[in-house]
Image (cartoon, rainbow, N blue to C red; front, top):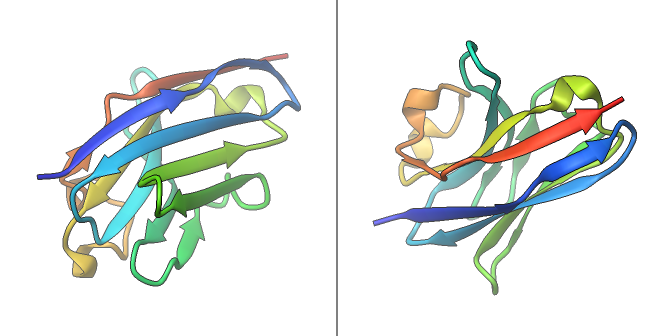
Length: 123
């Protein structure tokens, strides 16, 4: 069984930085960060394949967000810099155990989810 427990997030002024953490237990093929605002679907932000460390980012995150994995601590991170008010959202850690379902950004491809952490960016 996979369990994901998130921490971090909070409020920051535009242009600032925040880090999200996700403690991962159990085997995963890939892990990702999604975000969701009220009334909207979950949007993929960043993704990482566990075995070879390949990463991919949504256009909105490229150059500003970095996904990383501390294998010893079994913790997934999302480092966010140059934050904008549009980045304000609930952020979710996600994972699945089937590598063939890691290629896209569909929420249905990810079977395991964290509880979510709020990120608020004020101008």
